[in-house]
Amino acid sequence: MKPMKSGFESIRNYLGSKKEKGRRKIALLVDGPNMLRKEFQIDLEEIRDVLKDYGSIKIGRVFLNQYASDKLVEAIETQGFEPIICTSDVDVRLAVEGMELVFSPVIDTIALVTRDADFKPLLSKANEHGKETILFGAEPGLSVALKNSADYVIILKEGIMEHEYNSRDLKESGTEDFSEVPLPGEGQVKL
Image 1 (tube, rainbow, N blue to C red):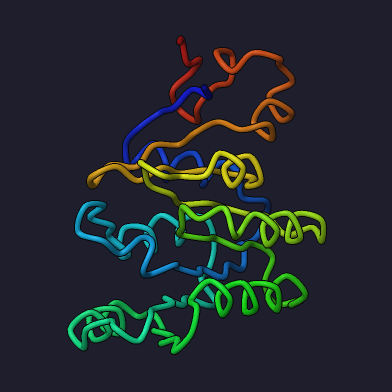
Image 2 (image 1 turned 180 degrees about the vertical axis):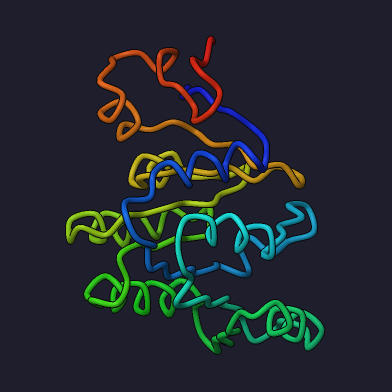
């Protein structure tokens, strides 16, 4: 299992340290039926705030099925996101729009909020075309294949975010051991 570091501020520091010169142009895509559930207590505003430290959110879309309540749709709009109501499968619509963004010159980072392995090809294609990928997921049920396809993985747990190290962290640190990968402003992480 990959090491984790928790805390909202830790995630902000981590992503802030990863941005290159200039601000990243981010597309945020949320799998509503999979993630906006009472048991996960996902706070879209917190996700947006974390990503704003990393770059500018150019596109923020929350994909919902036709059974989404008017209250949920209104809350999503109030937070500044675009609700996309799907009359058929939400996954197909999200994947199609995600693939369009892979080829968009306006976007250089794709952030997905999902647990669903169906989006592994989207993350793989985005990476293949030089896009950076950030996955916000939740347990239980977060696909291991999905986690391994994203550049950065942030696990949401009841109002707490945890960063999970991945292979990019090892490459950037020049080490073979996750225990030697420092977090910004925190020195070495001892596991």
